[in-house]
Length: 423
Image (cartoon, rainbow, N blue to C red; front, top):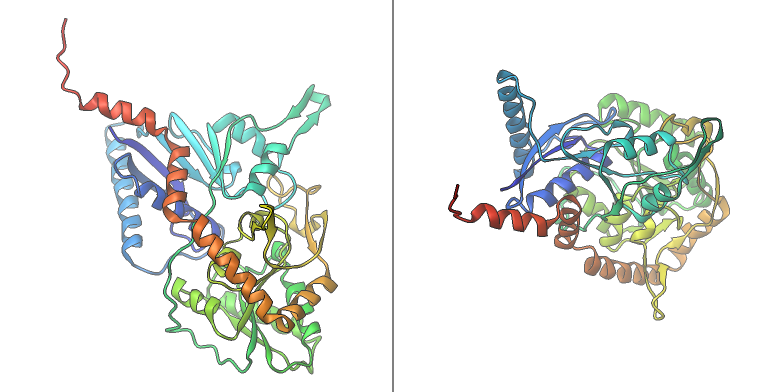
């Protein structure tokens, strides 16, 4: 008998958690012989919704409809919905008991510690946790608190935590509908939401400072502040104009790209012949999807060697040691800024990475001056990712953390037997 699993997630949102939800659903879909899938779609902040209506979107809509109809039947019969497993894709603050077995699938944390509330929720609500990087797993496992006034010591997560990285996608590049009037032949790409964690002000300001007099260098900013609306575009554009006022006579160019881009359009940007590197000097990543996408498309990366991206920016050297294959930016681990503090999520006393200005500027210049070297390094990393981050492997690993297939196969075998019942 199939396991009836309900997925509660922002599956239709254009967000990191939205992509995480769709990855999980694809993994479950790969084993429809095991799972009977239901979907409770939730919103994610102020992010927008998917606008495409491809086969996957139609499938997701069908799951939402199926779940709604099932809930209505249960309500009419005055019976609670019955599920074998719940998979909840969100931050641990929002975990709840929905089924006999509850699994939390979270991006985890970009800082150096988690909040006590996460520990409380994980220990009290879910049976296990799946996260997306070894950084998140390590931080969740190692965080502990002492509350002497309550007689509590070594308060930490007691439930198993597993890691499943994303897998690469085979996407055809297609610029259709994306009109960028490139005037420069040495371009850098930054794909990040403009928020405190992404360090966008320094990303832009230090870039302009380094290439101030170079008219053949450009920075392509695929960014937004909250969502992809026209109002957000105006707000984001105003923020950018206000920032670059400090560079009135600059010769380098900035190209602002706002709004929804398809995977094909993004792939075109990653592979554009004038693109020299992807930039990310954010303070921390749960995983770092744009970095990952750029890496498996063979684009050099300018980034710090800390947090979630460490799972895929390294490959073994001749001695078998995992070494970052990026244009490294030095950093300091320091306490998060007050404006980044998020009660119950980002602890005020936690730490994350702060890129060093001089190192960042040196890395940018190295990309231009040592182009062949870093392109070769990026190609080496691309081949490593294509070999070690395959879709079928990631899906199988994810499914193994949701259900014990050996137990399931025994149950299926017993269910399939035509047993004669004796008194």
